[in-house]
Image 1: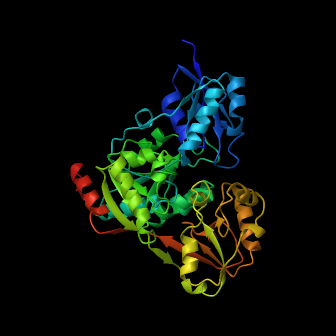
Image 2: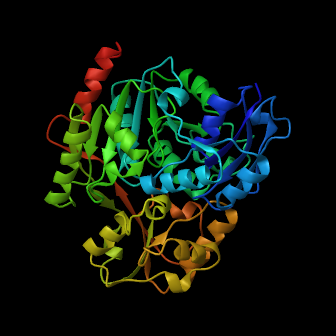
Image 3: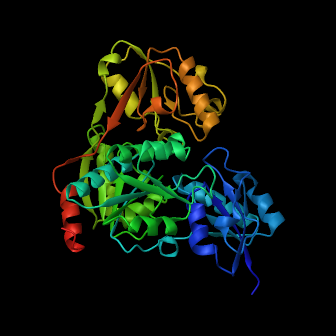
Length: 443
């Protein structure tokens, strides 16, 4: 049978995983290219032959998604596979219509085709949207399991924006590991909190190889999912975080709705800052889509270093990048803290932006009074640094999970804002975990 030619639409994450587990050694298909979007400077690279396998001795080109129709025509593509996350359903179907009009089939590979099975119990933490509070939930689970004397390893959704061969399997247990691996700001935002807790986190490109390494040192594995993607590993317990600041998104975004419908446990986060009607909309969605899920209510209290530096000052707010860009939020924890602790003025960062930071504001026009912590490479980190230093502000309020002083040199004091998960009432995560550990003979 003649091989069917495949184009995979991605963003340097789910696309590589789908290739590795479904297409890499499959003689019935030929993947002619990946495309890239969401993340800057990914297209123009090659998925290397060392990772692509024997069927691809020259590797696989990574092209721009905007050229999809041209690629379909020039390479004779039979199937377009959609493989990234945190997008509205309309976006997915728009791409499907474009693929169909160009003459190709359009595929979405689901959990059964792409989830790997672990020899150790897996707790998956995913969300309905980026910025819902998934990472703070994963951290809370990590702490609770460690307190019970268990060896816990977190495996983080991929962010391989550098040398893909070097990033095949990455293990992070110290700040030296972050420096050695030349981690971007986005990577540090996810890894640093685990390191601060004395934990180990894995990530990379080849998630079967990553899983087998992690299994060697874990009693329990936490899948710490990125964007609102569904897990790469088959979960024994699937926890999904919903966001009442974006009510209705749990039913309107891909693959967040998949997570929402499949969850064993749904956490309604940010109850302390959401209004009752929006919270009720989440409950209405649960009743409609997943009435058997266990529901946990939770708050996201803020913890601020040196709040006295904020009062009466002109403040530049820096927030977690993905939450504010493709996550669509207008502000985050830093903005809330600046307001709460009496900033005289929250300045508009846009007049001070340089380089790719200017492009970010042009692309994400909903951003006005915050600076997203963009840092997908050394050049962009320098542009972020220059933007901060240019800003006419007395102090920087940082809502990103990392210590900005480790990656940029700025001429202003930085006040860090942290947020944790605080469950309200019962059941809480400890109740859920006790039942889980008993089921797996780990209590």
